[in-house]
Length: 115
Image: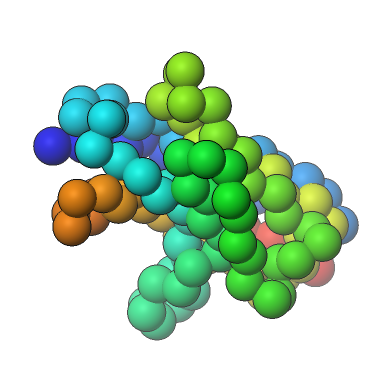
């Protein structure tokens, strides 16, 4: 079992920046890919950014050039640096971890961007 706890969500104005942190605990050795998803107004969660244990990253087209995902394997943490935030980035951001055919989710953290 893997436990994920997100932090860093807040309300900011458009053009601002936030950094989200996901702290992982439990059976961390089973985790390969970690990432961030967001859910906007009850719609399906969509991938924002992902990073493998080796550091390979992928991003949603809408955040490329603005968001950066990083990972500290020694601290069992994954980060999402969000710059030049836009109102359409508003939503609940969830940390996700996958490995050995399993998937785990955090409780989510709210990001609100006002125009």
